Image (cartoon, rainbow, N blue to C red):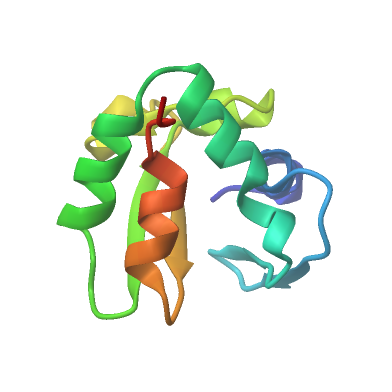
Amino acid sequence: MAPSEESENVQRAVENVLGNCVHRVERSPSTIRVASEDPRSLDLVHDQLRDRRVRATARRLLLANREGKSTTVMLNRQAAFVGVIVLCGGESESPLGPLYMTVASEELDSLIEWLTAYPSG
């Protein structure tokens, strides 16, 4: 990450992914970490995975990257800056470098199911 203007843009992109929820920001010279325990923090991700019809891809990536009680996916930084969730299969798919979204839960299977489930009926 380069100068402070870029770090502000990265923070804005992450906050756009979280939507309107309670969160905290932690900064280091090379990293911005935005964390939330607010149940609403994944609502936008859930809705966009459904609306953009990428639930199967999201499920595959979430399961493939699972480590214990957490999983990580990469998001396109430019898309996140304007509030759009675009999953990346590799770092090269986001020209400015991806955002890494890590989701941790004691009930990770249920959370992945909720994020990627197809409606019944």
